[in-house]
Length: 269
Image 1 (tube, rainbow, N blue to C red):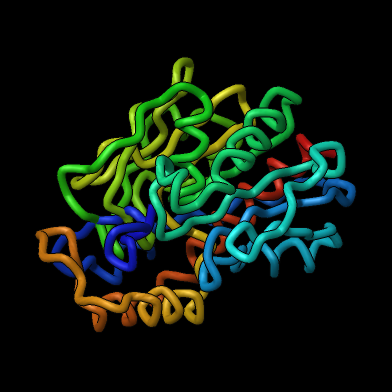
Image 2 (spheres, rainbow, N blue to C red):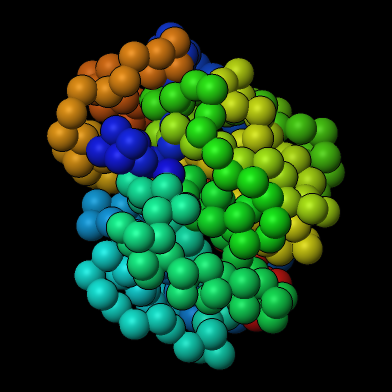
């Protein structure tokens, strides 16, 4: 969840993160082959929260990219046409069925794709939707987390083939007020000072990331422009100025995203 234009997107903060943290990001190991093309289908919940760098990576690697824009009334897609599902962020909460009735068919779709054992990647609200569908509890976090903050990867993440290229610590964008309990059988991959459950994996190919590694500088500007009210106060909430100054972190997290997508699309091919 992203703050509902303060109540939605789900993220939290801290004093300004050091711009030097990402300098330690390990260069992803080169893969010996590129996976054959697959259809990556994204689920978008709000106008300003699209696939971002996922779209650039898909085009550069000859994958098909299709999308469902729930907020504008698109019909639910055919699960048979989806090889890889990416679930984006949004300003609503996962339980706002009355205000966003499409959440009901979206959850059915996510559950079906998971049942078919296809790769699924959820970002921010998308991670919360996966957690909910798989039996985890989603609820208000004790702290808002909004801004660029360091993420600590757990040892189990470093041992997993999808995340072995991630460094022990890196900085990414957060923008949420909700958090989740891990679904049954999930492995915790990452934490922050504000939010202990930052990333998880289930069934070897279902991944939830509470943070954003798909955002480009232009996406961050859309996030900021979408906030029609002042940000909430909190020790893990940065100013708009600090958030907009985080552009230098984007190339490093995009390299992590690229290696993750390559590994997950290999499983989908």
